[in-house]
Amino acid sequence: MKNKLIILGMIATLFGGTGCKKFLNINSDPDTPQEPAVSSVFPAMLAGIPRGVQYDSRYLGKYTQNWLTYGNANGDTHDRHGYVFGSDNMGDIWRQVYYGLGKNLDYIIEKGIKTNQLDYVGASYALKAFMFQHATDYHGEIIFSEAFKEDTYYFKYDTQDKVYAGIDSLCRIAINYLDQAMLGTNTLSISDFTYKGDLSKWKKFTYGLLARNWNNLSNKSFYNPDSVISFANQSLASVDDDFAIPFDATKNDDANFYGPYRNNLTLFRPSNFVVKLLDGTTLAGAQTYANRDPRIAHMLSASQDTTNGNGGYRGVDPGIGDPLSATTTGVNARKRSAVLWGDSLYANPSAASFTANAGKYLFKDKAVMPIMTYAEIQFIKAEAAFRKGDKPTAYTAYRNGINGHFDFINRNYPSLYRSGAVIYNGAAISTAQRNAYLASANVKQDPATLTLTDIMLQKYIALWGWGWVETWTDLRRYHYTDIDPATTMQVYKNFTLPASFFPDNLNKPAYRVRPRYNSEYVWNLDELKRFGGDKADYHTYKMWFSEP
Image (cartoon, rainbow, N blue to C red; front, top):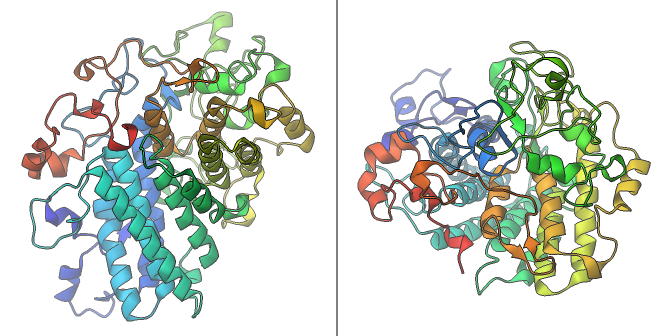
């Protein structure tokens, strides 16, 4: 990473910075402040998060089978767990960490300490922990201890165990500053469009980061489920604590990257894996209307055909696409997998046009981008309690997680986040629909019958469409196809890896993403060579957290 790339952007926007401290220091124009107020910098840090996560999820979402390519019968590169060398595809989380957020958060922290704005300091440390957690879970070894080091061209990478320990420390520092800030004057509310300056919610978010960090170590001999449970208990307590970033959708730059206006999902279709999770096939054992999850109507789009027993919901398989092409005619044309933006649609309903209520679920112009939810935290707690052998606690958390995701879909975001859009389709899920599902064969009815499969598949549903990095971390912790001893089937039941992997994979699935090409492979290649980053199959090297 060339240092010039990471010292730019003191005031970053969603699409990059507009200046740097050294530039500002040689200007005396009063309209260009040399030291902008932390309150003016902080909102851009929140706005910068979707830039990294959503951009990269176009490709990562194929690894996790949130979605797959619609029309490439010969096999899409990322459907097959491949990569495009020499491109910055899948490089935006890296950009987010080392350009969009990193040095700017350091500025907020330094200035916030000087001006006793400790609420900004605590929140910024929490965001630093978040960005490094995403980066290491995505890339593996990353630049941590030398990140943002001045006057440096070549940066040392840290092993993932050291990064994990460092993230733990950042979280504890964040909590300490937030505790101090609660005793003083809160000014964060003027800049915080997620929690409106509620420091108790920032603390809960930080404890959620600790829960993620510690639960990701489930394959390690030192995994401590009691600590995970403790962190989860201090984290998000209800859907009202969900951390989500809104979009105003007044122009391209402040619209949801996945809304129809920006037209970035045209070639994407849901996978058969997620369709089967929601239509009753996987969890209830049969695809019938009675077994159908009511969330399917809000999360996925139905095709024009409704005669196949699941309301016309169809997905695609990795590397194959939809066998019914755009040129298909007659009855079969109605059976094509629909676009993610709406039922019975095979094209974007409003590209380059802001149309009220266009889109569906999290794929609307004004739909929020979740960063952490109560449902996720409950499933983390459920897994930890199950691994501990405390099935009653695991069962309660499992049910709480399912209910939490129903609440997430039903939540009235417009009243909370400026002029955002609701994410349910038409009307919210009714109490009767929820109760019928909770009593169905999709959901275990007592602690004794609960399995890891139940927990992890419901977590997958709750994170679908936004929690790509966390879902991929889970899949890799279970090595994609690990067996659940209670069922003798895969934990991720019906999850099928590509029949044909990308040639460089050497018949192995992806476990990591290469660092950003235009910084690391151009400027820091010798450091990458130290741990195999120059090898063609480097992206298949297993992660530290995935191994014993």
